[in-house]
Length: 111
Ligand SMILES: [Zn+2]
Image (tube, rainbow, N blue to C red):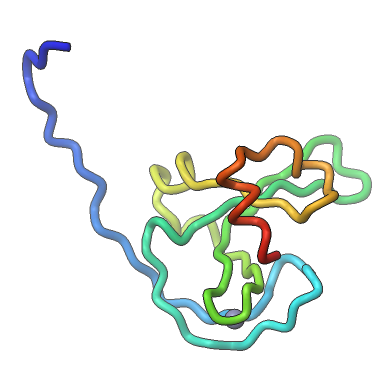
């Protein structure tokens, strides 16, 4: 490939201070309430469909490095680029587990 004009797009460094609360998904873990600083690579998404919902929704959050609990965070706090490219996680045996890539399944192992 020949580069005619080099672009200068670069994702801004992003971080967010959060608490591990286990909000948004009861995945049978006890949240440890650590205070954490997230970076772009820490964000994961998960799909869910509530009773009576006609289509699945997507929630964004992180898996705590201390207790492996998933905590959902307000998606308006996460840049769009990160939401577009973050990996998806799902609990083993759930409807969406089969959609995951091998790498995403590995990420989901701790859930
Ligand atoms: Zn935790």
